Image (cartoon, rainbow, N blue to C red; front, side, top):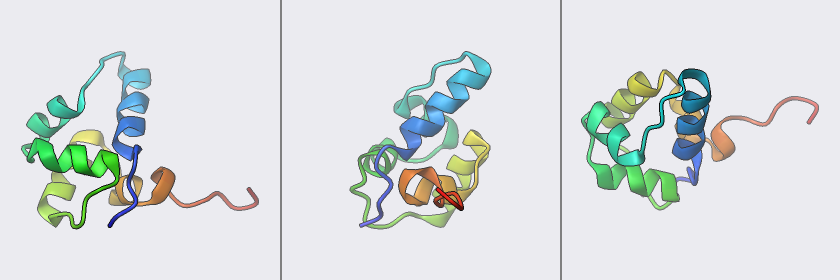
Length: 81
């Protein structure tokens, strides 16, 4: 399994802070044109694999890198932390 639990929720929260616009996981899936089940599994941390095209579309909509979605806690640990 891929440890992605909560990363999409975090990214959506950051987007809401920047734009003031609230998105749901369902809306993210619709805008990225990916199956909503994939988005829910990624956010729950239960995805076994990720289609690279779907990952690319999610990243384009969220304006993030794949690392932000696929890495535990949304990215690598900061140096000196």
